[in-house]
Image 1 (cartoon, rainbow, N blue to C red):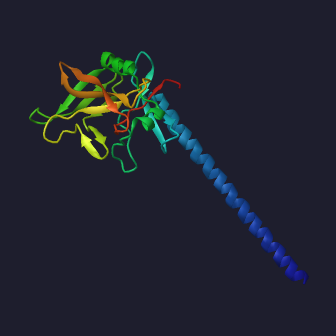
Image 2 (tube, one colour; image 1 turned 90 degrees about the vertical axis):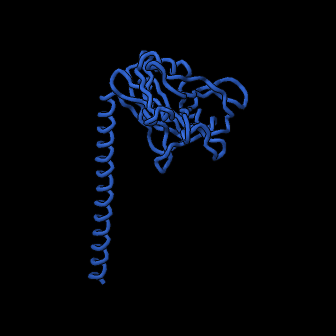
Image 3 (cartoon, rainbow, N blue to C red; image 1 turned 60 degrees about the vertical axis):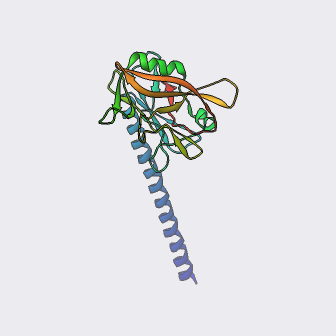
Length: 211
């Protein structure tokens, strides 16, 4: 009986030690992973890039410091869905993520260089590139927007338009969006349009520096 008892106690001790070792390894792995993540993020910050967690989407979104006077940081591309395509959102969802204002769009026009992207014939407008003082570029793809699942304003057989929501505090079921439809003398040809808030548009996100 004593021998059996000792064997049982030894087995329990070995299981306890194995369990403790496994827990310690997990803790160490998490610590190493966190240290790597923190170092990776700090490296991005040194380059004028920051990441923000958004409650309504998974993961993190990188915003870039273009050297603008206001300190506003922008995503360089439209938000993407899980499959890597452009994410089209209705206004009610987009506004929770941190939309740019009209004034922040004007700041881009005044402080950045712009280039247009066209088809080989020059007939179709594929989008605009906004280049900041540090060389970072925001892409405004002329991918249109969606009325239900029907795409509007995409360059199928003619000029397309780049759309994205901007912050709008006015009441009503129509909200403001930017439409960029061409380039002229190095400046984007754009207008502020009202679009039904239930339609789905591409989304660009902004943050103020150190926000």
